[in-house]
Length: 310
Image 1 (cartoon, rainbow, N blue to C red):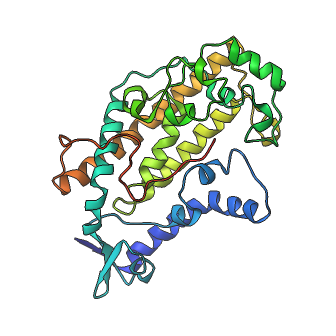
Image 2 (tube, rainbow, N blue to C red):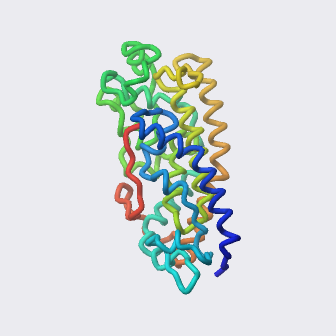
Image 3 (tube, one colour):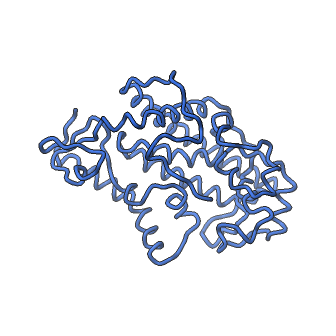
């Protein structure tokens, strides 16, 4: 075990918190005022990881912190004398979830990206039910009728189960494949903007067993992906300082694919880092990948986050 004196680890924790607070502070201010930003607040609302948790730094397994009452008070830590460290015994309960995560990251890494969805999942979430749309404060660029026509005139190619499950009843039958949780390993692919966003969830599920800077890296990439997601959505987001991507047009489709490719390129090294962390944790526990993978949809990880409608 490597042991860090307080003068060594505290600056790291403070730098992590300051970096997180550029996102958490405005979110908390808006929440207290009863305001909502459909882009900037999305990751806090969709994923079950609190602003406080995002701002908290963890050193990861094998690092002891001297004089760290902030960490000693956390249930995942044990303290011997003046040294607090992540309790390795708590890793065992995470093993089924880690094996599932390893399988998901590996198969996504090895799958050819697809560039044919054009962000129409957001359109499919309001098709035929515009009055029930989540972001009621944002007008539809083309109106309800225009939005419905875009969905009807395109082939829906969504491959992401957590987007598909929010399709309206009118949209779901129009998708190329009816997706269920059991299909996730088969269809998940690295060109999907939502798959890039979900790297954030996979990252924070590794806390506190990995150094938590990777969580902020994943958060910031997910926020980038969310901006693209909303720019390509049926909503008018110009009042949010974003330039719409009109995916109903040929030029808009080309712009969306360029953004997809950019995000996928940024996601690749992050995915590999996460896969390396997961593999290291499994090897530490002797839990190799050849064991049965937990059935999709039954996530045995007690820290697993629920997700809400996007």
